[in-house]
Length: 425
Image (cartoon, rainbow, N blue to C red):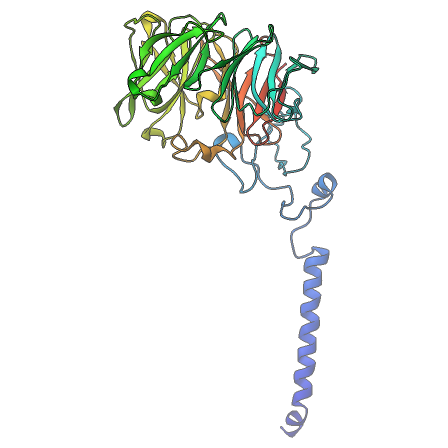
């Protein structure tokens, strides 16, 4: 007992040192040799050359973005060109399987404007647009060449409504000033400030608009010549301004739509003619009505939201010939807004569709301002809808344009305002 009592402190010290050496050895084996821990993937080391801080190791499971699954902070898409691929797309990294032509997977999106633009419009397989930086109008041809449409500058325009022939445009300014400019004649005509929301006739010779005087008794839907002359009232508006949408149909039958509430989840859409016609109305299954005419004007693509799908916008298609208005209405199982779509032909529609939408997105569209979009093609004749591309870069798309021969798709990015091109053929 005396022996152990005398050397007790020495035994404790030796035990402590031995334990420390053993623990240090185990830590070294675990973190530096990998013998007791997960082995580093040789493939990942070859492909990525190490990990980016916070980016993960690039070997995690990929969840198809079309199913609604996501890894926080990334959009995760299975490349349809490589079935079963599990190469994770890491933000800021190039992906080896990016396609140059849209085929349903991640597709290259080429910046073709290099500046924020407003209101791009298709003109004979070329794109016309307003450049926010210098206040000029430009034309982008099919070869990628950019030329000025006019040497005149129009500073601070915040909205442009093109005529169907793209030779004229209504220019709107933040202070409420409005004018029509003719790019052929170089003439510019000032329009009344109380005219609001414009649409051109199919032959580009006239406009329809809402004339909203201070007195509600003087508020009318009107038409006028393309220089603002010979204005004619066609329908009284009164206090219903917010429910009237000006949209001159391609078949010259409709000047605008008027939307009236039926109940919480339904609206009645009235079609306003040019001569007091008594047209049939159409019941739509939701609120937040947005619409686009087909190229012939015999169909209408629209979006509404209701409580059945969590107040998220959904696409519908309706027959709109005068005698058949609303007789056939079909839902399209895509959650997006009609304003994010375009008709390439009378039956072919291209749409930007958010990868996911939270409940209430119809009420508050701004919640999707940071949500990346996929591109879909819809055939209204067959009912087929296909994912054609996920633009590389996770863009929030505000407008889509497709060339007449459907070889190129152009879109504007909501964040930068710039124009991008995706090859379809």
